[in-house]
Image (cartoon, rainbow, N blue to C red; front, side, top):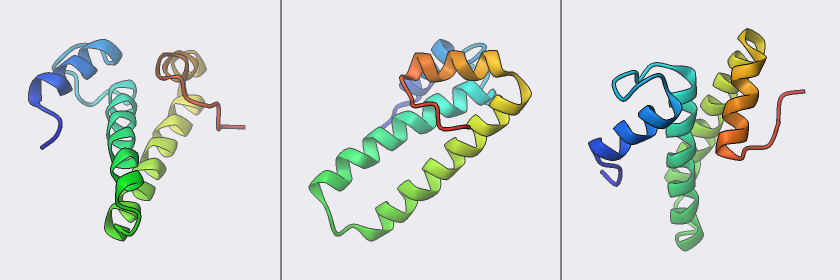
Length: 92
């Protein structure tokens, strides 16, 4: 896979509660953002890869659902993660 175990641990350590805390919403959003960036780069080269396009759309939906959960549960954590990952504030 394009993302090694060490790279994933680094993402979770930076954005989650620790390197082994893979279930936190912030860590998952950070991992999804990394995967979305990778798939976007792939689709720029391969415009007719429709299975990757579908996977990207599903991943964006999952990230949006997690961000909506964070917005509803704890707005300070939501604002911190969108600032750290430089995402647009999509929840209105």
